[in-house]
Length: 391
Image 1 (tube, rainbow, N blue to C red):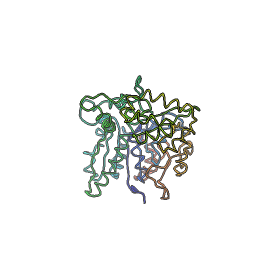
Image 2 (image 1 turned 180 degrees about the vertical axis):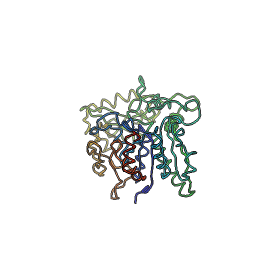
Image 3 (image 1 turned 90 degrees about the horizontal axis):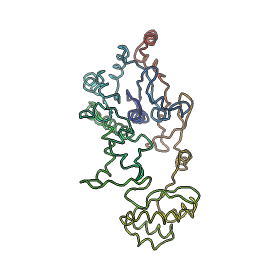
Image 4 (image 1 turned 120 degrees about the vertical axis):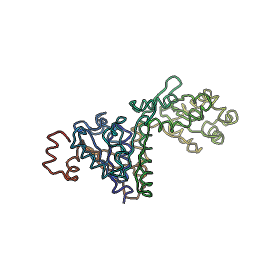
């Protein structure tokens, strides 16, 4: 039996944060009904067409869900949604600030009719304060949280290459929902959860926050290198491959100088991470000169022999073929409206156990008629709702 088997999750979601949360719940066996606007649905459906005609973000965040289209301006559709929510275990929403409450979908309105309901509200900035009503997108939160200021090169700040503010909020929402369901098992009652994207990202900023305590200067932007440890970052080899070195302490530094650089005298000359940081430009020239005389595989052989941690600076084509993922049988397939695509099992899946559901990515409104029939609507009633553009 899957951990959340038998649980019903209703979600009013778009973009990444809430869909990423509810996809994790679906992976654990919950039934997730995604309520979408007729005709267009979650606007993330239209981001691109890279995944067999579907959007890459949408395929990533929406497998294993059922799509129900409802025009929530129509009274009959609002009644359908209320019925669903009264049966649900969890409601997740990341609509515009205040929109769910205006429809009576806040915890205070729903708890009297469904006291076991867990309501998870995801927003950019949270309730209260001068930013409550502001629109919030991933790049804006990366910027507001200070993340962009410590990322990039000395000359140019940079955003992350993926939606980390959305992911942070989605993962805190996911873990908070699980905790609330565990609490409900003890108390018999649901609760309201509130997840702010800004607060999720600010939590992730703990290291640079404490690094700047009492007005101290921030960590320098160091590109793909570490801002406070050296050598810790990518170096180019003679064949164009880049290998990421990670030397953490003086014992590793001494071994690195001896077995990788073949310059053992450097160990004492640059002892201590603070010294290496201060002389990073001089050291960079030394390390680059050695790496330039080696192929990527030759450098890797030296690093393996010295037992120095490293990683290859892979691109997406490399990740698709990654030997470790293949050796651990982490790939499967899921369905999409345009055909099957590869998908990774979620990290919690243990080899040898029954696989998680890994359901298909739904076409817009694919489950509308079935869900309406489940709620007792006759074929004639469903036809009338369609004629009235309520669904």
